[in-house]
Image (cartoon, rainbow, N blue to C red):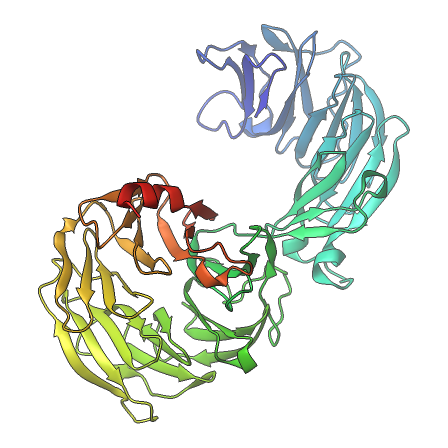
Amino acid sequence: ISWDFEGKRLVVVGDGMQSPESAKVIMWDTGVKCGDLGAHARKKGSSCAFRPCRPMRIATGGAEDASVFFHKGPPFQRIVGDGVVSEKCHERGAVHSLRYNKDGSMLASVGTDGSVCFYEGKGMGLITRMEKVHKSSIFSCAWNRGGTRLLTCGADGYVRLLDGKAGTVVNEWDVATLQSGEKREKVPMGAMLLGCTFVKGDVPVAVGYNGQISLLPAAAKGVDEPWIFTGHQAPISAMTFGSTGTNTLYTADTDGVVVEWDGATGASRGRVSNVDEEDPDITGKVHAGATVTSLAFCAANDGGNGTLYSAGWDDFVRITHGRSCDGKLKMGAQPNAMTCGANLVVVMTVEGLVLIRDEQAVSELIPLPYEATAACLSKDDSTLFVSGNDCNIYIYNVASSSAGNPLEESHVIKGGHLKPVQSLSLSPDGTKLAAADIRDVCIYDTTDYSNIVSKGRWCFHTQRIGCLAWSPDGSVIASGGNDDNIFLWCPAKKTKRVHYRFAHRGGVTGLSFVGSNAAEGGGDWMLVSAGADGCVNWWNVEEDAKTKFGF
């Protein structure tokens, strides 16, 4: 897709198997065609470019015919047989990218054959052709601001900087080696580079198949060493904070990738990697591509540095220190959630519960007479709350000994919900229990399990409420659901609420107040959310909460 320099016309290319065309140029506001563009072989186009000045030109690249078609207009029509235009400059395959430089004096094309072709911008005659610039397919190219140098990247894991006029390679960066830490005979799939561009100051940037963004060194522009930025390409499915006062946040997604973030700046610190398992494609999938259903951080382990537990649909709970995953525990059934206290981790599976302490399972799979839907453990590891598909909430006393079944049922909350509870959260002082289903958020007093907020009061979510989070002082609770909404509630002001619409496209999957995790304080009213859109958002809710609830 490409805009013209006036912002009025749009050219698009793609698979035209359902129509007689592989490319169209239209007016953006009316959709009216501005001419007829040439159809590539099998009606498949792969790239296009609009000349950024008059006289207007459009270039389109084929996905299978190794051709570049040129058009003039408006109205636009293909230029054929003028003796100047060079359409067959690539040897085979697809023309993956077409780019005009800033003043429209030159056009560059790159493709499957690893060559780069430079054309005169107006007449579209071939200026020069550089063969085997990359050992394999070139997927993308981009001009610098001056329009004299071209950046290319491809499946060989290299980024190269070319001089457009001289037709020479000025610089190159081995991004595949940079990401993998060693030179490999075969380029890892994750290090294959799919896109490149220049950012402010003509600093080259490339993005790989694994989703990692490489900011490459350009000493003249003030970047002396490469930086790797990472994140998520898939929906985020779990989130948790690290040790107190470290500004550390962990998130995991449905591809099995776990990322560590700096909670103060929002910058990614890197991906968690398996120490004992090879990652030949350097995709960073800790759980072998399976969805990570839950994260839990136990600060009491590892001499105070803390241990991260991640549960995934590969039926393992994996153990991570820092960003190194160096242990795993096999579960007897698929784990769907986790909760932790001071030193105990409870794993909720489809067939029951498993207790973990000091990185070892201290119980067999404990079967339950109902299907568990959510779990929450008190800070002192003494009380466990489990909700079932029967709409009840079960409370258990947890024995400190490693008995066969260390759980003793002490109470059952019945009739509190019309639908199964999907999330549970205990207030910081342990006096209130929050429970949410697909519609209602309810609050219970943990001394006698009476209702503080009953069903039908906080009932403004329209889909599953997957996460709850208390503010550090316990005065406010936040809820996030699959309806893309976040609500703030106050038990002292039951009739009032704060509503954040469209927080995450596809639903909210993680929610927590920063609180004591902030290294320099000020986190009591900072709310962090994660969602199915692959994003992590920071919200300062102090003004909204104090205005609405009158603090």
